[in-house]
Image (tube, rainbow, N blue to C red; front, side, top):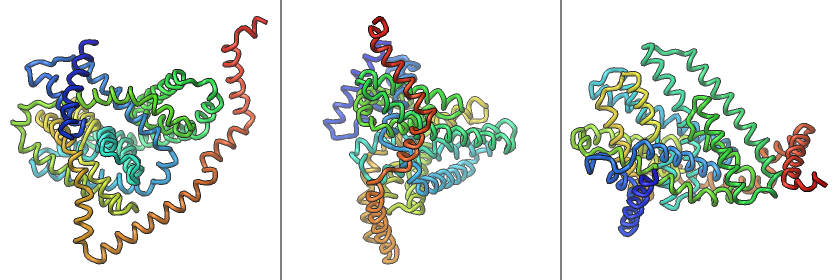
Length: 452
């Protein structure tokens, strides 16, 4: 295990340094490093793939946890229109496009449905890492983009239930789907209650006892606890990590936690991208290159089109809509999960999995370059748009500017979340629980008082 980490870190360090010197995104360096240590270049893997996969999964959790620290639950609520319309437009549009491509390629109904499911989900980890490297984390579009990605992750769980039902029973099981949606709703409500009312209150009460070491241990414990809760409920562990990050963002300790988490996040996130690179099989690239090319073109054009339209219909400016659409031009973790589900059920064509893996790697590789083209494309569109469309674009910009001013004025007072927490903190039950917790901590910290 130590040898694996040594090989990973040295290879990733050298390759990423080379990419830095060439002024290329570091993420691409990690993918190339994965290709070099993987099983296909030198005939055997230089590291244990199972270890790399496990560390990579931890990297996804840490990345999503840190994203959540910058994204409050109230932000998800405030961007509800953009998130809902944007996510439904992307998922619906890409599923129709993917299904159409599958039927055009003469796939049977089941394989076409699975292809549609694999093409409709962007990768939260890859998108947010690309945004971070592009220096766009403070851009206005990021809040809406993150909301869309989170809704996609939730919908993916329901989609997997639907695909499983159709694959096993060859028919739609509405009862099972409604049951899953019910569990989802109850779980999200429980998370919301815990996030807004309980954990922030407790963290604030014990703040004086939390040095850096204790804070990071408590934060990671809460994060992993929510990950297990999400998985037990049948959802993605990454979604649980994000939710706990959003919960801790309400405590006022978010920046401190994020600073402590950054080294861990960077190391394990690098391993995640290395694990993506390890899946590249040059033989598959050569053998299936026409299919891979078609799938990549469908992903890129479809995500740009439906991402831009969905965000525009949801109320974002054209510039922000295009920034979102151009950042979604890849598929990721959920595509592999859906492909694995198809394999386990025995309904997926053997060639489809390597095509999806290769398409994911290629689109991930291209994402930073496509994102750089957003502003030139927006400028071209604006300059060549009909006068009527240009007037709508200008009007939307003015409306967003006015809405931002109104939001700043509103934020000067206490938020609804603050009011709710204040009300709960004043209840007798909460007061007694918190005071009892503080008393026990104080007694444990000062055992000599007991002896006296």
